[in-house]
Image (tube, rainbow, N blue to C red):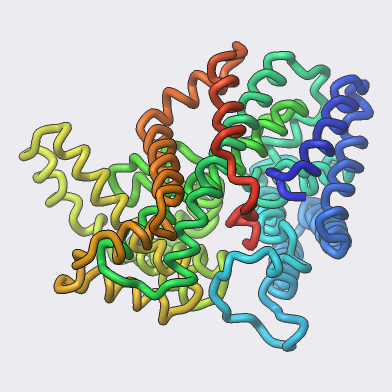
Length: 477
């Protein structure tokens, strides 16, 4: 039941209508049942894994809180973290058929999601809760009902955002759902559908053709394919988040934003402040800050060690294939270089006109991110190397035959229909990237914006990709 499927919207419409008219006291029980139905529909085994994770985390958190001696608290804390990570590694990385850990790269197929549905996200949430209880940042949650809803809440279950209990649990006993929340949520769901069905799914055809079917040809063709994947991934992920956050808003819960227009970031540091914010915040608070504090005497070297470790864990979280490790390594190197070149870059910023420096920074950052995504998207290390060799082969960068070696490859064919579809896709994608902030402000508001709604419905009707419906890319994580 993907969030862009007809099944989901039938399910959600029923849940929303019942939830809206229920008395506040009964809503949390109803939403727990709804979440269990949602999870079971996708994969029944995942529900039993989730229930075990909920009960063990809730029980061990109580043990951590109730024991008076610090040594005993530490034992239970370490046990709880070990148990959470063991469940994650067993059901995400262990291949039950081969009886070994899987070191395969991403292949972007839903078949990978058999027993590990949502486990990457709720495991990090559980660990976050255990950390906060151990370090007394939040009070212990005494209600198993509230904690169960926090862990299983279906709008955020599959792909996040990774949520802190202190942000979610206080919202459970809200007395009413505002009509403005329904308006905002509905418009945001519509925006997410446009991003997914009209942009990401249309781009997926070109990305799949150039990454998975054809070997890299000219450097320019390969480079454009990489750019298209970066844009596809962004709209695929933000499309999901718009649907998830919009659904949650209509049910009366505010989830934190996960993106802040990262394609316009002016540095890699800025990019990670704007891309996948919930995961970045989790890793920053629980890995980067403790390590940078531990190695503070080593100054920039200590920060470099903290950055390297944090990004390696991020890569392993995505998958233990070599391509994910190299993807994370790219960003670790980028961040360390930025750390050591700070004063030099500040001098350049002062020497150049403000607008020129800004646009150059955006272009450089976008390219660095896109190059790292070659590892993220490639199905093997060999494929990644092929792409890099093709892009940086200056003798073969420009095509000798533009029609055969460039346009027909990017458009997945050489007739007028293929070129028209590519032109429409690029036009819509470019418009959303250039005017993204304006589109977001006008559509995600308390006022019903009829013009935006009509425009989005027309885009979905005329240009939506319904013959090739892709799973959300981050479903596999």
